[in-house]
Length: 377
Image (cartoon, rainbow, N blue to C red; front, side, top):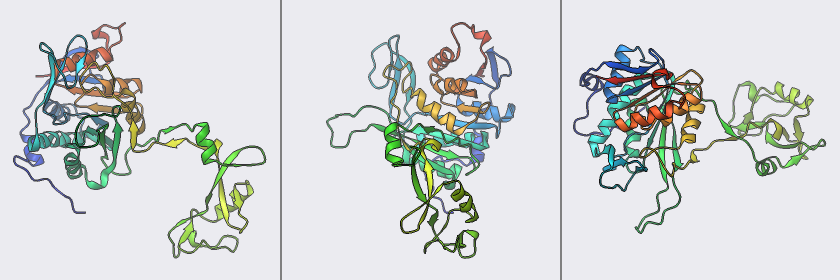
């Protein structure tokens, strides 16, 4: 399969990337020694290389979520009252600077994606949160690193209320999340669904049987002909319609008919009954409305329930969740609540402080926390 590559100055090969990363050691500060869950202060490129070389974590990470800088050319600050995303006051403390742009920014992200892929297990997946201005370039980089075939979704996330800016363009209420697997069809997918409302049930299951149960029907056949396969054979003297094939071995239809799960139309066309009581709920689509906190404790803090959804769908209990731009620790807290282990990395003092607060209950001292707090030296 051909691949489109971005060409720019100072783009290193994978070997050059790995060779250019300064070595570091992780110094234990406090917490539970040798815990699978870790909060690490340091440059994420150095830390991830250390996790591979010294902690045997290559191929062990099951789930990655990252919300890196967006190449906005902004300085993000905080004070005692709130975190500031755009506006700031004199005397505010700097949380982080988002100053990289163009090819320099793209290569910055690419080098980290190279390490992340090495850390990921074969059944792992990655969600990269980015905005509409730079995200399409990052999509090409992710195709290069993970393979175009491992692209799963471009998820639209509604982040805020409609805007009324005075400019000659549409209002921007979204950002995007690029969702990739390490190896297609091997990734964990738990298919979390939302419950059907009464309105959904009445609309989707418009028929009612003699016992008052709501149901709908679907054809027993599907598009596409098979020449010699079992699904091309006749059932009760009836072949599948022209250009179609039976959805399953026709012998299975006898069992369905015995159970009263086949409805015959007036023209003698068989259809399978699907009851509302058996519904697993609504499949979640690729447009999600999870608005960010109105009073964030850290700049660009993302919606907690959004990240919980991703973790529930793409990992299992005891898996390792990694966020190498962990900010205030939202991903780490969600992982902990859902029974996963976590590794969070950030180089900002304020990010580490906020993460420690989110992860540590008020009843516990830091030396009793159930994870390792380390720093890169």
